[in-house]
Length: 285
Image 1 (cartoon, rainbow, N blue to C red):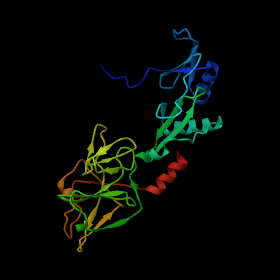
Image 2 (cartoon, rainbow, N blue to C red; image 1 turned 135 degrees about the vertical axis):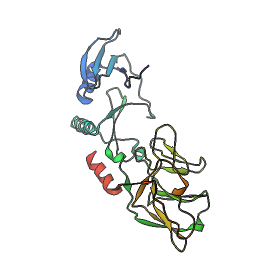
Image 3 (cartoon, rainbow, N blue to C red; image 1 turned 180 degrees about the horizontal axis):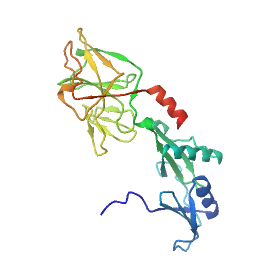
Image 4 (tube, rainbow, N blue to C red; image 1 turned 90 degrees about the vertical axis):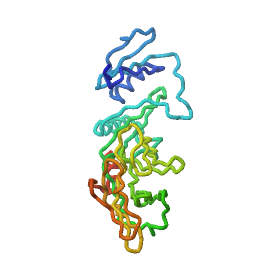
């Protein structure tokens, strides 16, 4: 059976049908289809989205309170960036504080979010993803000197926060792996106890060589070119990024003086300045 790819309707209980209907019509922007069209012995109102889904308001004597602890219980609307901007303007004009995002520290670059509550305290997340989420972001650190090659044991993973990369030492040599998740520009962390890179923004995981592990279809983490100079110093160029389809031993820079990055079979990718993209995201979202 083919999947429809959409839900049919959402039922929300309310204490005051008139008040809730006005909220979902005037603030959220849904169209009122009609009253008491559903076979329910309680007063109800059916509203429609512009993608054919429905929201059914059912008036009850008492609506259970929203959990005081907040938690993750909520409904969410996923919009385009243009729709998100229009919704933000409409919310602010209606007197809502649309800038509140209780999980701001967990948002990836280019991920926009507003949280509002309906008259009964139901939490709604309004979300959109901008093009910043797929742009390749240059840290601005330039060329980074990491130290002598002998300072890094085989199997070690060293994080350079300023340069937004990990220096990985494998049996085959060194890899300078970009910290940016290839899913939606979250910054990954190295979880040594699990031997993988993890993106806390949307849960993507990558093995120690930067190859994706899971079912989200993410590309491998990108590589920065690097070299080992005549004195054995490890040098990483954070201005350039290379995409790959997987790991091959030739991608590793030999752990020897004069070892150089081999671009064969890799694709150099255009990058943008991270600071500029973040500023654009602030003003354009």
